[in-house]
Amino acid sequence: MTRHATQPIEGQKPGTSGLRKKTRVFMQPGYLENFVQSIFDGIGGASGKTFVLGGDGRFFNAKAIQTILKMAAANGAARVIVGQDGLLSTPAASHLIRLNGTDGGIILSASHNPGGPDEDFGIKFNTPNGGPAPEGVTNAIFARTQTIDGYQKLDAPDVDLGALGETSVGEMAVTVVDPVEDYEALMASIFDFDAIRAMIAGGFTISFDAMHAVTGPYAAKILEGTLGAPAGSVVNGTPSPDFGGGHPDPNPVWARALMDRMMGEDAPDFGAASDGDGDRNMIVGRNCYVSPSDSLAVLAANATPVPAYAKGLAGVARSMPTSAAADRVAERLGIGLYETPTGWKFFGNLLDAGKVTICGEESAGTGSDHVREKDGLWAVLFWLNLLAARKLSVAEVMADHWATYGRNYYTRLDFEAVPTEAAAALMDGVRDRLGDLPGQSFGDLTVESADEFSYHDPVDGSESHGQGLRIWYEGGARAVLRTSGTGTEGATIRCYLEAYDAETLDDPAKLDPVRTATMELAGFRTHIGRTEPDVTT
Ligand code: VG1
Ligand code: CO
Image (cartoon, helix red, strand yellow):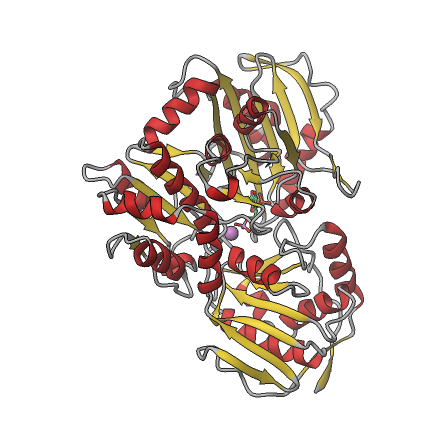
Protein backbone atom coordinates (compact mmCIF):
# COMPACT_ATOMS: atom_id res chain seq x y z
CA MET A 1 0.00 0.00 0.00
CA THR A 2 1.19 3.49 -0.75
CA ARG A 3 0.33 6.64 1.10
CA HIS A 4 0.42 9.51 -1.36
CA ALA A 5 0.97 13.00 -0.05
CA THR A 6 -1.62 15.47 -1.28
CA GLN A 7 -3.10 18.81 -0.36
CA PRO A 8 -6.50 20.46 -0.38
CA ILE A 9 -7.96 21.25 -3.80
CA GLU A 10 -10.23 24.26 -4.27
CA GLY A 11 -13.86 23.75 -5.15
CA GLN A 12 -14.51 20.17 -4.14
CA LYS A 13 -17.84 21.09 -2.59
CA PRO A 14 -20.59 18.64 -3.53
CA GLY A 15 -23.66 20.32 -5.06
CA THR A 16 -27.26 19.14 -5.46
CA SER A 17 -26.10 15.74 -6.58
CA GLY A 18 -22.52 15.13 -5.52
CA LEU A 19 -19.38 16.62 -7.05
CA ARG A 20 -19.67 17.45 -10.75
CA LYS A 21 -16.85 18.87 -12.82
CA LYS A 22 -15.41 18.72 -16.30
CA THR A 23 -13.96 15.26 -16.91
CA ARG A 24 -10.47 16.69 -17.43
CA VAL A 25 -10.65 18.23 -13.96
CA PHE A 26 -11.37 14.78 -12.52
CA MET A 27 -8.53 13.29 -14.59
CA GLN A 28 -5.88 15.59 -13.08
CA PRO A 29 -3.44 13.59 -10.97
CA GLY A 30 -4.77 13.21 -7.45
CA TYR A 31 -8.09 15.00 -8.01
CA LEU A 32 -10.42 11.99 -7.91
CA GLU A 33 -8.22 10.44 -5.23
CA ASN A 34 -8.51 13.54 -3.02
CA PHE A 35 -12.28 13.43 -3.11
CA VAL A 36 -12.56 9.66 -2.63
CA GLN A 37 -10.23 9.80 0.38
CA SER A 38 -12.32 12.68 1.73
CA ILE A 39 -15.44 10.50 1.39
CA PHE A 40 -13.81 7.68 3.34
CA ASP A 41 -12.47 10.07 5.99
CA GLY A 42 -15.74 12.04 6.09
CA ILE A 43 -17.77 8.93 6.96
CA GLY A 44 -15.40 7.87 9.71
CA GLY A 45 -13.16 5.58 7.70
CA ALA A 46 -13.70 2.61 5.38
CA SER A 47 -12.18 -0.06 7.57
CA GLY A 48 -14.20 -3.29 7.64
CA LYS A 49 -17.00 -1.73 5.59
CA THR A 50 -18.86 -2.92 2.51
CA PHE A 51 -19.69 -0.57 -0.33
CA VAL A 52 -21.53 -0.66 -3.65
CA LEU A 53 -19.72 0.87 -6.61
CA GLY A 54 -20.84 1.61 -10.15
CA GLY A 55 -21.55 4.31 -12.66
CA ASP A 56 -23.34 5.26 -15.84
CA GLY A 57 -20.59 4.13 -18.20
CA ARG A 58 -19.48 7.56 -19.29
CA PHE A 59 -15.89 8.35 -20.30
CA PHE A 60 -13.47 7.80 -17.35
CA ASN A 61 -16.02 5.56 -15.54
CA ALA A 62 -14.02 2.33 -15.79
CA LYS A 63 -10.73 3.99 -14.91
CA ALA A 64 -12.20 5.78 -11.91
CA ILE A 65 -13.67 2.50 -10.67
CA GLN A 66 -10.26 0.81 -10.72
CA THR A 67 -8.81 3.72 -8.72
CA ILE A 68 -11.63 3.63 -6.17
CA LEU A 69 -11.30 -0.16 -5.73
CA LYS A 70 -7.59 0.20 -4.97
CA MET A 71 -8.27 3.05 -2.58
CA ALA A 72 -11.07 1.15 -0.82
CA ALA A 73 -8.69 -1.79 -0.38
CA ALA A 74 -5.93 0.44 0.96
CA ASN A 75 -8.40 2.03 3.38
CA GLY A 76 -9.28 -1.39 4.77
CA ALA A 77 -12.73 -1.95 3.26
CA ALA A 78 -13.94 -5.55 3.59
CA ARG A 79 -15.89 -5.82 0.33
CA VAL A 80 -17.02 -3.84 -2.68
CA ILE A 81 -19.99 -4.92 -4.79
CA VAL A 82 -19.47 -3.54 -8.27
CA GLY A 83 -21.65 -3.68 -11.39
CA GLN A 84 -20.34 -5.70 -14.33
CA ASP A 85 -18.29 -3.49 -16.66
CA GLY A 86 -18.56 -0.83 -13.96
CA LEU A 87 -22.21 -0.20 -14.81
CA LEU A 88 -25.00 0.46 -12.33
CA SER A 89 -27.93 2.77 -12.80
CA THR A 90 -28.36 5.11 -9.85
CA PRO A 91 -31.61 3.45 -8.68
CA ALA A 92 -30.07 -0.01 -9.09
CA ALA A 93 -27.09 1.10 -6.99
CA SER A 94 -29.49 2.42 -4.35
CA HIS A 95 -31.27 -0.95 -4.34
CA LEU A 96 -28.01 -2.94 -4.00
CA ILE A 97 -26.92 -0.74 -1.09
CA ARG A 98 -30.16 -1.57 0.72
CA LEU A 99 -30.51 -5.19 -0.37
CA ASN A 100 -27.04 -6.12 0.86
CA GLY A 101 -27.22 -4.09 4.04
CA THR A 102 -24.02 -2.27 3.08
CA ASP A 103 -22.35 0.80 4.54
CA GLY A 104 -23.22 2.88 1.48
CA GLY A 105 -22.04 3.26 -2.05
CA ILE A 106 -20.15 5.42 -4.50
CA ILE A 107 -21.95 6.32 -7.71
CA LEU A 108 -20.10 7.76 -10.68
CA SER A 109 -22.24 9.94 -12.90
CA ALA A 110 -22.91 13.45 -14.03
CA SER A 111 -26.45 12.27 -14.70
CA HIS A 112 -28.07 14.19 -17.55
CA ASN A 113 -24.92 16.16 -18.40
CA PRO A 114 -23.05 15.08 -21.55
CA GLY A 115 -20.03 12.78 -21.21
CA GLY A 116 -16.62 12.55 -22.83
CA PRO A 117 -13.11 13.91 -22.28
CA ASP A 118 -14.34 17.48 -22.75
CA GLU A 119 -17.69 17.03 -21.04
CA ASP A 120 -18.74 16.19 -17.51
CA PHE A 121 -18.01 13.64 -14.82
CA GLY A 122 -19.36 13.26 -11.31
CA ILE A 123 -19.17 11.29 -8.09
CA LYS A 124 -21.40 11.01 -5.08
CA PHE A 125 -21.67 9.03 -1.90
CA ASN A 126 -24.92 7.34 -0.87
CA THR A 127 -25.56 6.39 2.72
CA PRO A 128 -26.65 2.94 4.01
CA ASN A 129 -30.33 3.81 3.43
CA GLY A 130 -29.47 3.93 -0.29
CA GLY A 131 -30.00 7.67 -0.62
CA PRO A 132 -27.73 10.55 -1.54
CA ALA A 133 -25.76 11.69 1.50
CA PRO A 134 -27.64 14.35 3.47
CA GLU A 135 -26.06 17.76 4.02
CA GLY A 136 -24.48 16.75 7.33
CA VAL A 137 -22.46 14.07 5.54
CA THR A 138 -21.61 16.10 2.43
CA ASN A 139 -20.46 18.93 4.71
CA ALA A 140 -18.15 16.53 6.56
CA ILE A 141 -16.75 15.27 3.24
CA PHE A 142 -16.23 18.82 2.03
CA ALA A 143 -14.57 19.82 5.30
CA ARG A 144 -12.13 16.96 4.83
CA THR A 145 -11.22 18.17 1.32
CA GLN A 146 -10.04 21.38 3.00
CA THR A 147 -7.57 19.69 5.35
CA ILE A 148 -6.54 16.53 3.52
CA ASP A 149 -2.83 15.80 3.35
CA GLY A 150 -2.67 12.29 1.96
CA TYR A 151 -4.59 9.44 0.35
CA GLN A 152 -4.09 5.69 0.39
CA LYS A 153 -4.04 3.51 -2.66
CA LEU A 154 -2.95 -0.08 -3.10
CA ASP A 155 -0.43 -0.90 -5.80
CA ALA A 156 -2.38 -3.74 -7.39
CA PRO A 157 -3.39 -4.88 -10.85
CA ASP A 158 -6.77 -3.82 -12.29
CA VAL A 159 -9.78 -6.02 -11.62
CA ASP A 160 -11.46 -7.71 -14.59
CA LEU A 161 -14.84 -5.98 -14.40
CA GLY A 162 -16.22 -8.08 -17.26
CA ALA A 163 -16.18 -11.32 -15.29
CA LEU A 164 -19.13 -11.92 -12.93
CA GLY A 165 -18.38 -13.36 -9.52
CA GLU A 166 -15.88 -13.10 -6.70
CA THR A 167 -12.41 -11.64 -6.99
CA SER A 168 -10.23 -9.46 -4.79
CA VAL A 169 -7.96 -6.46 -4.55
CA GLY A 170 -5.33 -7.18 -1.92
CA GLU A 171 -7.24 -8.35 1.14
CA MET A 172 -10.51 -6.80 0.01
CA ALA A 173 -13.22 -8.97 -1.56
CA VAL A 174 -14.77 -7.72 -4.78
CA THR A 175 -18.10 -9.06 -6.04
CA VAL A 176 -18.89 -8.28 -9.66
CA VAL A 177 -22.67 -8.46 -10.11
CA ASP A 178 -25.08 -8.39 -13.03
CA PRO A 179 -26.35 -4.78 -12.91
CA VAL A 180 -29.89 -5.71 -13.95
CA GLU A 181 -30.79 -8.92 -12.10
CA ASP A 182 -31.64 -7.71 -8.59
CA TYR A 183 -33.21 -4.54 -9.94
CA GLU A 184 -35.51 -6.51 -12.21
CA ALA A 185 -36.57 -8.73 -9.33
CA LEU A 186 -37.46 -5.60 -7.35
CA MET A 187 -39.57 -4.24 -10.22
CA ALA A 188 -41.34 -7.61 -10.58
CA SER A 189 -42.20 -7.45 -6.89
CA ILE A 190 -43.77 -4.00 -7.25
CA PHE A 191 -45.71 -4.08 -10.51
CA ASP A 192 -48.30 -6.29 -12.13
CA PHE A 193 -46.02 -7.71 -14.83
CA ASP A 194 -48.76 -10.08 -16.03
CA ALA A 195 -51.12 -7.20 -16.79
CA ILE A 196 -48.39 -5.27 -18.62
CA ARG A 197 -47.36 -8.39 -20.55
CA ALA A 198 -50.97 -9.00 -21.59
CA MET A 199 -51.37 -5.39 -22.75
CA ILE A 200 -48.22 -5.64 -24.86
CA ALA A 201 -49.26 -9.03 -26.24
CA GLY A 202 -52.52 -7.34 -27.25
CA GLY A 203 -50.64 -4.98 -29.56
CA PHE A 204 -49.79 -2.04 -27.30
CA THR A 205 -46.61 -0.45 -28.70
CA ILE A 206 -43.71 1.18 -26.87
CA SER A 207 -40.70 3.26 -27.82
CA PHE A 208 -38.14 3.62 -25.04
CA ASP A 209 -35.15 5.87 -25.79
CA ALA A 210 -32.23 4.92 -23.55
CA MET A 211 -30.23 7.84 -24.99
CA HIS A 212 -27.06 5.69 -25.28
CA ALA A 213 -26.95 5.66 -21.49
CA VAL A 214 -27.13 3.21 -18.64
CA THR A 215 -30.80 2.17 -18.86
CA GLY A 216 -30.27 0.43 -22.21
CA PRO A 217 -29.47 -3.00 -20.71
CA TYR A 218 -32.20 -2.59 -18.06
CA ALA A 219 -34.91 -1.63 -20.55
CA ALA A 220 -33.88 -4.29 -23.07
CA LYS A 221 -34.01 -7.01 -20.44
CA ILE A 222 -37.24 -5.92 -18.77
CA LEU A 223 -39.32 -4.40 -21.58
CA GLU A 224 -38.19 -6.53 -24.52
CA GLY A 225 -37.21 -9.64 -22.58
CA THR A 226 -39.54 -10.21 -19.65
CA LEU A 227 -42.53 -8.12 -20.78
CA GLY A 228 -42.41 -9.22 -24.41
CA ALA A 229 -42.16 -5.90 -26.27
CA PRO A 230 -40.84 -6.55 -29.79
CA ALA A 231 -37.12 -6.09 -30.48
CA GLY A 232 -36.53 -2.47 -31.44
CA SER A 233 -38.90 -1.12 -28.79
CA VAL A 234 -35.76 0.06 -26.99
CA VAL A 235 -33.71 2.47 -29.08
CA ASN A 236 -30.18 3.78 -28.42
CA GLY A 237 -29.87 0.90 -25.98
CA THR A 238 -26.11 0.40 -25.88
CA PRO A 239 -24.35 2.59 -23.29
CA SER A 240 -21.58 4.64 -24.87
CA PRO A 241 -18.86 6.73 -23.16
CA ASP A 242 -20.10 9.94 -24.81
CA PHE A 243 -23.80 8.99 -25.04
CA GLY A 244 -23.62 9.05 -28.81
CA GLY A 245 -22.46 12.66 -28.63
CA GLY A 246 -25.76 13.83 -27.12
CA HIS A 247 -27.12 15.11 -23.83
CA PRO A 248 -28.64 12.13 -22.03
CA ASP A 249 -31.34 14.42 -20.69
CA PRO A 250 -34.90 13.14 -21.15
CA ASN A 251 -36.81 16.26 -22.06
CA PRO A 252 -38.50 17.46 -25.26
CA VAL A 253 -35.34 19.32 -26.30
CA TRP A 254 -32.72 16.60 -25.93
CA ALA A 255 -35.02 13.66 -26.64
CA ARG A 256 -36.20 15.34 -29.81
CA ALA A 257 -36.16 12.19 -31.93
CA LEU A 258 -38.52 10.47 -29.51
CA MET A 259 -40.79 13.52 -29.41
CA ASP A 260 -40.95 13.59 -33.22
CA ARG A 261 -41.76 9.89 -33.29
CA MET A 262 -44.54 10.34 -30.72
CA MET A 263 -46.07 13.29 -32.55
CA GLY A 264 -45.79 11.60 -35.96
CA GLU A 265 -48.11 9.52 -38.14
CA ASP A 266 -47.19 6.06 -36.88
CA ALA A 267 -46.58 6.98 -33.28
CA PRO A 268 -46.49 4.08 -30.85
CA ASP A 269 -48.93 4.06 -27.93
CA PHE A 270 -46.32 4.97 -25.37
CA GLY A 271 -42.95 6.69 -25.42
CA ALA A 272 -40.40 7.16 -22.68
CA ALA A 273 -36.78 8.12 -22.15
CA SER A 274 -34.31 8.08 -19.31
CA ASP A 275 -31.14 10.01 -18.47
CA GLY A 276 -27.43 9.18 -18.18
CA ASP A 277 -27.68 7.37 -14.87
CA GLY A 278 -31.25 6.11 -15.18
CA ASP A 279 -32.90 8.05 -12.40
CA ARG A 280 -34.93 10.44 -14.58
CA ASN A 281 -37.84 9.71 -16.87
CA MET A 282 -39.82 11.36 -19.61
CA ILE A 283 -43.31 10.09 -20.42
CA VAL A 284 -44.99 10.77 -23.75
CA GLY A 285 -48.21 9.42 -25.17
CA ARG A 286 -49.25 9.56 -28.79
CA ASN A 287 -49.49 13.31 -29.38
CA CYS A 288 -49.30 13.96 -25.67
CA TYR A 289 -46.26 15.04 -23.65
CA VAL A 290 -46.72 14.56 -19.91
CA SER A 291 -44.95 17.17 -17.80
CA PRO A 292 -43.01 15.66 -14.89
CA SER A 293 -45.07 17.61 -12.36
CA ASP A 294 -48.27 16.20 -13.88
CA SER A 295 -46.76 12.74 -14.03
CA LEU A 296 -46.18 12.77 -10.28
CA ALA A 297 -49.81 13.80 -9.73
CA VAL A 298 -51.11 11.09 -12.07
CA LEU A 299 -49.04 8.38 -10.39
CA ALA A 300 -50.30 9.48 -6.98
CA ALA A 301 -53.90 9.47 -8.22
CA ASN A 302 -53.55 6.03 -9.85
CA ALA A 303 -51.40 4.15 -7.36
CA THR A 304 -53.77 1.45 -6.20
CA PRO A 305 -53.70 -0.69 -9.39
CA VAL A 306 -50.00 -1.22 -8.65
CA PRO A 307 -49.72 -4.23 -6.31
CA ALA A 308 -47.06 -2.59 -4.11
CA TYR A 309 -49.28 0.45 -3.53
CA ALA A 310 -52.62 -1.37 -3.41
CA LYS A 311 -53.22 -0.28 0.17
CA GLY A 312 -52.81 3.39 -0.76
CA LEU A 313 -50.06 5.91 -0.19
CA ALA A 314 -48.78 7.19 3.14
CA GLY A 315 -48.12 10.62 1.65
CA VAL A 316 -46.58 12.44 -1.30
CA ALA A 317 -43.52 14.69 -1.40
CA ARG A 318 -42.43 17.09 -4.11
CA SER A 319 -39.61 19.56 -4.44
CA MET A 320 -40.59 23.19 -3.97
CA PRO A 321 -40.26 24.25 -7.64
CA THR A 322 -42.44 21.29 -8.74
CA SER A 323 -46.01 22.28 -9.55
CA ALA A 324 -48.80 21.89 -7.04
CA ALA A 325 -50.64 19.34 -9.22
CA ALA A 326 -49.72 16.59 -6.75
CA ASP A 327 -50.98 18.70 -3.84
CA ARG A 328 -54.51 18.54 -5.26
CA VAL A 329 -54.34 14.74 -5.44
CA ALA A 330 -52.95 14.45 -1.91
CA GLU A 331 -55.69 16.70 -0.63
CA ARG A 332 -58.39 14.60 -2.25
CA LEU A 333 -56.83 11.38 -0.97
CA GLY A 334 -56.56 12.89 2.50
CA ILE A 335 -52.84 12.15 2.77
CA GLY A 336 -49.82 14.31 3.67
CA LEU A 337 -48.06 16.52 1.13
CA TYR A 338 -44.48 17.59 1.86
CA GLU A 339 -42.59 20.34 0.05
CA THR A 340 -38.81 19.94 0.10
CA PRO A 341 -35.84 21.77 -1.43
CA THR A 342 -34.55 20.65 -4.83
CA GLY A 343 -32.53 17.42 -4.74
CA TRP A 344 -33.49 13.86 -3.92
CA LYS A 345 -31.54 13.78 -0.67
CA PHE A 346 -34.31 15.75 1.04
CA PHE A 347 -36.83 12.94 0.45
CA GLY A 348 -34.74 10.35 2.31
CA ASN A 349 -35.88 11.16 5.84
CA LEU A 350 -39.55 11.32 4.82
CA LEU A 351 -39.29 7.93 3.11
CA ASP A 352 -37.32 6.36 5.97
CA ALA A 353 -39.90 7.63 8.47
CA GLY A 354 -42.77 6.20 6.42
CA LYS A 355 -44.35 9.63 5.97
CA VAL A 356 -44.43 9.43 2.19
CA THR A 357 -44.60 6.66 -0.39
CA ILE A 358 -44.15 8.61 -3.64
CA CYS A 359 -41.90 11.59 -4.41
CA GLY A 360 -41.14 13.70 -7.43
CA GLU A 361 -39.39 16.67 -8.93
CA GLU A 362 -40.22 18.83 -11.93
CA SER A 363 -36.87 17.86 -13.43
CA ALA A 364 -38.19 14.49 -14.63
CA GLY A 365 -37.63 12.61 -11.39
CA THR A 366 -40.19 10.34 -9.75
CA GLY A 367 -39.69 7.53 -7.30
CA SER A 368 -41.02 5.76 -4.24
CA ASP A 369 -40.00 4.07 -1.04
CA HIS A 370 -38.68 1.03 -2.98
CA VAL A 371 -35.24 2.74 -3.19
CA ARG A 372 -33.86 6.07 -2.03
CA GLU A 373 -33.21 7.60 -5.44
CA LYS A 374 -35.52 8.68 -8.20
CA ASP A 375 -36.05 5.86 -10.63
CA GLY A 376 -36.63 6.30 -14.36
CA LEU A 377 -37.61 2.78 -15.34
CA TRP A 378 -39.81 2.45 -12.26
CA ALA A 379 -41.81 5.46 -13.48
CA VAL A 380 -42.11 3.91 -16.94
CA LEU A 381 -43.35 0.61 -15.48
CA PHE A 382 -45.76 2.49 -13.21
CA TRP A 383 -47.28 4.21 -16.24
CA LEU A 384 -47.52 0.90 -18.12
CA ASN A 385 -49.19 -0.70 -15.09
CA LEU A 386 -51.74 2.09 -14.77
CA LEU A 387 -52.49 2.12 -18.51
CA ALA A 388 -53.00 -1.65 -18.42
CA ALA A 389 -55.37 -1.26 -15.49
CA ARG A 390 -57.35 1.71 -16.75
CA LYS A 391 -57.40 0.70 -20.42
CA LEU A 392 -57.08 4.32 -21.53
CA SER A 393 -54.51 6.10 -23.70
CA VAL A 394 -52.00 8.49 -22.15
CA ALA A 395 -53.94 11.45 -23.62
CA GLU A 396 -57.19 10.13 -22.14
CA VAL A 397 -55.58 9.69 -18.72
CA MET A 398 -54.35 13.30 -18.83
CA ALA A 399 -57.69 14.69 -20.01
CA ASP A 400 -59.46 12.82 -17.25
CA HIS A 401 -56.93 14.00 -14.67
CA TRP A 402 -57.27 17.67 -15.61
CA ALA A 403 -61.05 17.42 -15.75
CA THR A 404 -60.99 16.08 -12.21
CA TYR A 405 -58.36 18.33 -10.63
CA GLY A 406 -57.93 21.31 -12.95
CA ARG A 407 -54.59 21.98 -14.62
CA ASN A 408 -51.36 23.39 -13.21
CA TYR A 409 -49.75 24.91 -16.28
CA TYR A 410 -46.03 24.73 -15.84
CA THR A 411 -42.75 25.46 -17.55
CA ARG A 412 -39.08 25.80 -16.63
CA LEU A 413 -36.67 28.17 -18.38
CA ASP A 414 -32.94 27.40 -18.08
CA PHE A 415 -30.36 30.11 -18.72
CA GLU A 416 -27.06 28.26 -18.99
CA ALA A 417 -23.39 29.25 -18.78
CA VAL A 418 -24.27 32.67 -17.36
CA PRO A 419 -21.21 34.50 -15.95
CA THR A 420 -21.21 33.71 -12.25
CA GLU A 421 -21.20 37.37 -11.14
CA ALA A 422 -24.09 38.29 -13.43
CA ALA A 423 -26.16 35.40 -12.12
CA ALA A 424 -25.37 36.40 -8.55
CA ALA A 425 -26.31 40.02 -9.27
CA LEU A 426 -29.66 38.94 -10.71
CA MET A 427 -30.45 36.69 -7.76
CA ASP A 428 -29.22 39.21 -5.16
CA GLY A 429 -31.24 41.90 -6.90
CA VAL A 430 -34.45 39.94 -6.30
CA ARG A 431 -33.44 38.73 -2.83
CA ASP A 432 -32.70 42.26 -1.64
CA ARG A 433 -36.12 43.47 -2.79
CA LEU A 434 -38.27 40.59 -1.51
CA GLY A 435 -39.89 42.73 1.17
CA ASP A 436 -40.70 45.56 -1.25
CA LEU A 437 -42.17 43.46 -4.06
CA PRO A 438 -45.73 42.92 -2.75
CA GLY A 439 -48.04 45.42 -4.40
CA GLN A 440 -45.65 46.21 -7.25
CA SER A 441 -46.79 45.46 -10.80
CA PHE A 442 -44.76 43.94 -13.59
CA GLY A 443 -46.37 43.57 -17.00
CA ASP A 444 -50.01 42.69 -16.32
CA LEU A 445 -49.39 41.11 -12.93
CA THR A 446 -49.10 42.41 -9.40
CA VAL A 447 -46.96 40.66 -6.78
CA GLU A 448 -48.92 39.33 -3.85
CA SER A 449 -46.05 37.95 -1.78
CA ALA A 450 -42.43 36.90 -2.11
CA ASP A 451 -39.91 35.00 0.01
CA GLU A 452 -36.83 32.79 -0.01
CA PHE A 453 -37.59 29.12 0.66
CA SER A 454 -36.19 27.52 3.80
CA TYR A 455 -36.86 23.92 4.73
CA HIS A 456 -37.36 22.55 8.18
CA ASP A 457 -36.99 18.77 8.03
CA PRO A 458 -39.92 17.35 10.02
CA VAL A 459 -37.99 14.17 10.81
CA ASP A 460 -34.59 15.30 12.07
CA GLY A 461 -35.31 18.99 12.58
CA SER A 462 -32.46 20.15 10.33
CA GLU A 463 -32.75 23.48 8.53
CA SER A 464 -31.80 24.26 4.93
CA HIS A 465 -31.82 27.88 3.90
CA GLY A 466 -31.48 29.74 0.60
CA GLN A 467 -33.41 27.14 -1.40
CA GLY A 468 -35.00 29.37 -4.03
CA LEU A 469 -36.73 32.72 -4.42
CA ARG A 470 -40.51 32.52 -4.68
CA ILE A 471 -42.88 35.11 -6.06
CA TRP A 472 -46.66 34.76 -5.98
CA TYR A 473 -48.73 37.02 -8.17
CA GLU A 474 -52.29 38.07 -7.51
CA GLY A 475 -54.56 35.49 -9.11
CA GLY A 476 -52.39 32.60 -7.92
CA ALA A 477 -49.57 32.33 -10.48
CA ARG A 478 -46.11 31.59 -9.09
CA ALA A 479 -42.52 32.07 -10.22
CA VAL A 480 -39.44 30.51 -8.64
CA LEU A 481 -35.83 31.48 -9.28
CA ARG A 482 -32.81 29.44 -8.24
CA THR A 483 -29.33 28.68 -9.43
CA SER A 484 -28.39 25.16 -10.37
CA GLY A 485 -26.16 23.00 -8.20
CA THR A 486 -25.32 20.58 -11.02
CA GLY A 487 -24.08 22.82 -13.84
CA THR A 488 -20.34 22.77 -14.55
CA GLU A 489 -19.90 25.97 -16.57
CA GLY A 490 -20.54 29.42 -15.10
CA ALA A 491 -23.96 29.54 -13.48
CA THR A 492 -27.29 28.16 -14.64
CA ILE A 493 -30.34 30.18 -13.61
CA ARG A 494 -33.57 28.24 -13.50
CA CYS A 495 -36.85 30.11 -13.71
CA TYR A 496 -39.94 28.02 -12.92
CA LEU A 497 -43.40 29.33 -13.89
CA GLU A 498 -46.78 28.00 -12.83
CA ALA A 499 -50.43 29.01 -13.14
CA TYR A 500 -53.52 27.05 -12.22
CA ASP A 501 -56.76 26.90 -14.16
CA ALA A 502 -59.74 24.84 -13.10
CA GLU A 503 -61.76 25.29 -16.29
CA THR A 504 -59.63 26.12 -19.31
CA LEU A 505 -57.60 22.98 -19.77
CA ASP A 506 -55.80 23.71 -23.02
CA ASP A 507 -54.53 27.28 -23.16
CA PRO A 508 -51.03 27.45 -24.69
CA ALA A 509 -50.70 31.14 -23.70
CA LYS A 510 -51.60 30.63 -20.04
CA LEU A 511 -48.06 31.26 -18.77
CA ASP A 512 -47.20 34.20 -21.04
CA PRO A 513 -48.08 36.95 -18.55
CA VAL A 514 -46.20 35.16 -15.74
CA ARG A 515 -43.15 34.90 -17.92
CA THR A 516 -43.22 38.54 -19.01
CA ALA A 517 -43.72 39.74 -15.44
CA THR A 518 -40.93 37.59 -14.05
CA MET A 519 -38.39 38.55 -16.72
CA GLU A 520 -39.10 42.20 -15.90
CA LEU A 521 -39.20 41.76 -12.14
CA ALA A 522 -35.82 40.00 -12.03
CA GLY A 523 -34.21 42.20 -14.69
CA PHE A 524 -33.03 39.35 -16.93
CA ARG A 525 -32.20 41.75 -19.76
CA THR A 526 -30.29 44.13 -17.51
CA HIS A 527 -28.26 41.48 -15.73
CA ILE A 528 -27.61 38.78 -18.32
CA GLY A 529 -28.58 40.53 -21.55
CA ARG A 530 -31.32 38.14 -22.58
CA THR A 531 -34.78 36.87 -21.81
CA GLU A 532 -34.61 33.82 -24.08
CA PRO A 533 -33.54 30.66 -22.24
CA ASP A 534 -31.23 27.97 -23.63
CA VAL A 535 -33.64 25.21 -22.74
CA THR A 536 -37.37 25.30 -22.07
CA THR A 537 -39.03 22.29 -20.54
C1 VG1 B 1 -31.04 19.36 -11.04
C2 VG1 B 1 -32.55 19.30 -10.90
C3 VG1 B 1 -32.92 18.66 -9.59
C4 VG1 B 1 -32.26 17.27 -9.51
C5 VG1 B 1 -30.77 17.37 -9.74
C6 VG1 B 1 -30.09 16.03 -9.82
O1 VG1 B 1 -30.49 20.12 -10.01
O2 VG1 B 1 -33.11 20.60 -10.97
O3 VG1 B 1 -34.30 18.58 -9.48
O4 VG1 B 1 -32.50 16.67 -8.27
O5 VG1 B 1 -30.51 18.05 -10.96
O6 VG1 B 1 -30.68 15.23 -10.81
P1 VG1 B 1 -30.04 21.64 -10.22
O7 VG1 B 1 -29.42 22.05 -8.93
O8 VG1 B 1 -29.11 21.67 -11.39
O9 VG1 B 1 -31.30 22.40 -10.55
V1 VG1 B 1 -29.78 14.00 -11.55
O10 VG1 B 1 -30.74 13.15 -12.57
O11 VG1 B 1 -28.69 15.04 -12.29
O12 VG1 B 1 -29.02 13.18 -10.34
CO1 CO C 1 -29.82 11.48 -13.26
